[in-house]
Length: 382
Image 1: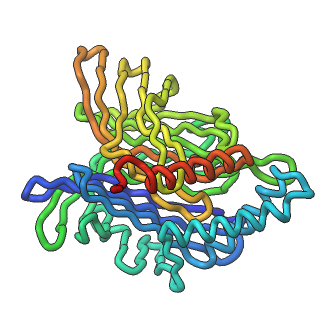
Image 2: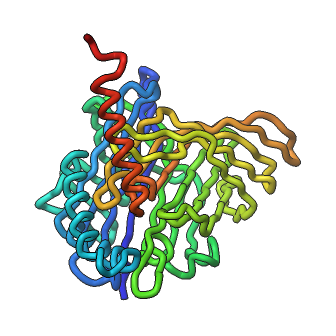
Image 3: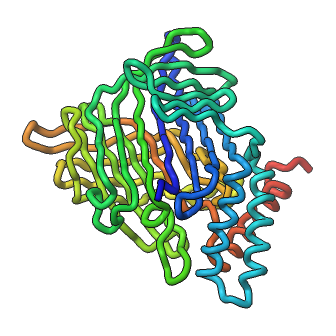
């Protein structure tokens, strides 16, 4: 049995000679049926924002195979979580809602899929390209403001290479996880030289344990909160916090600290949301600011977003929050104590789609209230 899902995730920043900074993210997915069979579908998510937060851009695109695959998996999830007499109505409502949401949010349905090569790995899809290069990896993608980046990424750190049950026994051997948290970026943006720093993740395996939780004859949807932080003292921090997307019940959580470029397990972590943002586009409520406490490292601090609206539409889940963040904290250890800062990425998955009747009603009411406020609020001219 092959992998049911695999994805490559790359994020970081690029600095121009004019001292402009662009934060960049691209995530490319290939998906199969639950047993790993069938023709692969593909999805590409991209996001970019400048340092000021005034100029941002995102794009979400899928193939027809991905849409068909979503419908098959959604049917199993609905059959597990909805009473039999309501399943037909629930499926019809979900498929209609998903298609309408995709059109409204500008998700691009591609007739032609990507060109993917296995060895050496490369993917090319319209104006996006990513793959292995002689000295690392190459990336070509769009930025905010209609700009285009073409860069080489050279690893500056060792790679994490682990199975999911090594990260947390609650996952089981569901997937493999590779991560390099520091890559030096050099290249051009619209022909002008740039340099910066990037992070790359690669994961592949099964839906179960990471995206879906088996329940009787079907599945429940899982969500997660993922932190990838580069600290200015040279350490890098990876944290993943899973939960049931419908009930918000906590699941498996793991952490990895990269010190001197080497990955080490960091099991004792407390992550507490301290501020939420409600999307005016989807009415989803995301925890966009967090307090982190890592007593094993003597590290405490707060993660805050560069801007609050960094929501990206995703087919089937309506949207995720995937954004550039900053870290400000305090470190106390054998080498002394002091303030520590950093930057990175926060990914919030499972908040974008209402999975219960109550959530549907709350979401619809919030959308209605937002629309009424826009129409009759104090800013309206009389």
